[in-house]
Length: 302
Image 1 (cartoon, rainbow, N blue to C red):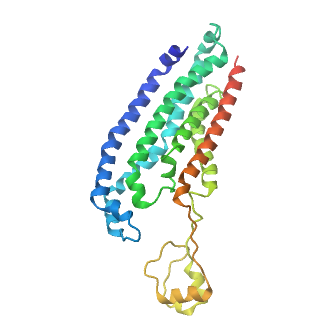
Image 2: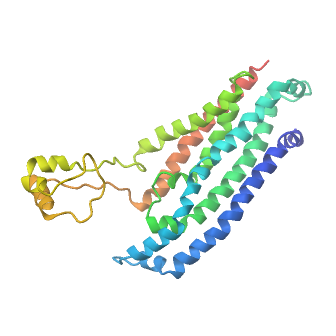
């Protein structure tokens, strides 16, 4: 049965391995280049020195490698692609052709048939996800150290163990969704699968409060209405704004007079792996639920 599953899905596995290999051909040389620049420019040594002013070195590094930000959406799509090309066709192909009935009449039980196919395909997807997660984590170290952005959306979910959990969940979601739709609806199922992954991710990860900050800027109209000296400094931006360089003295005096305080909420760096494992556990639990549903649904196929 394992040999049959391999024969059925070998092209998906080969193409998936080729895609990961192509990414490695890009990530390895560029990662080595970034690591060399990070060290040779003195930025790494500067960042490790408490109280050192690394602004110029950091800006130079950022200007040189800022263009790599286009890779973030591509890497974030990797689990969805695994789900679409590994999970979705796993059972759908058998249902469309009716070959699953042949397997069940050859002394192969339904749990064994499903388990073997999942073992081969999920195992291959897991190997690809682990390889890609390791490569991206290693590749992004200089960028993360330079920007202190390891909790930022698009960075946190590309590093560590969470991409592995995303991939397992996406593959099992693809299998489960194609078991619940007809042949005509499979194209829509693939689209819904991608949307489901994103919706679940947004409602579990960001709700933890460790990635997305409350945000919001400051409305200068509030100060101008209460301090005439501030109004005389205008014009000021209408609505919330971000950082304000070179804050004039009247604004500082008004802020102090009104008793306003600037509060910054942050997560200590040592909690990175705590949040990684929390998120990993959430998606693995969801994946287990999908696996149970898949087994239940398979037993009811006629």
